[in-house]
Image (cartoon, rainbow, N blue to C red):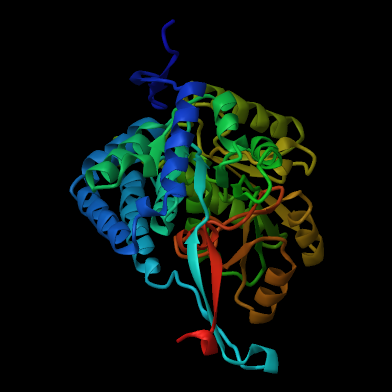
Length: 466
């Protein structure tokens, strides 16, 4: 019986880029067995210096392949060339960050002699790898997500099994080959391109100690419920990022930031600017200003170096976004720019003004190039609307008043609040993750390294030592 294959297609025109054979239950169980074998035998654990050597070599190889890595990411994921190159450079920086954090991934001294019972003792902790890690990834940043879901585990000493998104598996697969060339033993990082059924088999295996999942909330929360007792997890789901703009905000400064945060990667970012609550005195000015920028954005082939907005990941997403915007039109919202599909692969950057609070665009993550602007008169009402959804990830506030800045930031339900910046800002050494239905646990390379290790304490009774 022949093995099942998938076709990786270009989001730009639907052409087949590559055919990949899917793995099944046999390969999943084999991967788990290999990972379990090296973790259970401490003689096979990679010492820190060896991990550093491998990751340093990985950086060197990646730096020699920046152009090819960029083209692979842009071709399979549709993110424009220039943004994909930034992703590659960021990915290289992520590996360097893991190397630098290894120097501080240590235990600590535990004070003794503070009570009579603790005299003549010394104690300290060490950090050990937690065990087998399983990483299930999303399509929108095919290389950088692979970095975040593989490199911290390798740095902390955990064997990792990586399941890339079926629509964008090539960047992750290519990165793992780079790790092998850099000297990583293959059982320490295995790629499984498989369907959901077999990914679930990975997650539920009792040998798995850590799950990193980026994707839909429905799938992520279900997988968490299937984890074995003691297994840790980090789930990163979407958000419906709110922005509050006060009357004193520097609108000239804010407009390009909001446009970038809303239309970057055609809005296919989990913290993309989606809901902007602007004071009634400036709301129309804000909306028209963003629309003016959006109309000038170059939409097209992601491999064209002039392109600013690429395609959505597949035609089904274009149809869905079209339906959501059409619903907004019917509800009475004004479409200040865009509002239509440019082809079966592309949707025009769109600005929706004052949509109803009860439509999909106001209540769910659009994951497309659509930004909504809402008027408000009372700040507390705006904050209430911003917090009205069960999703909470990153948010932002624009104001020049320090009191307003602190007040609004404290009241917004978010894991991070950006002040005078868009919601999609991120650097890889900061904590990153959602709360409520947007996820659990924190990403960010140092944070993942910490979560994929666990402490062991050694207590020495010194007066018994001869």
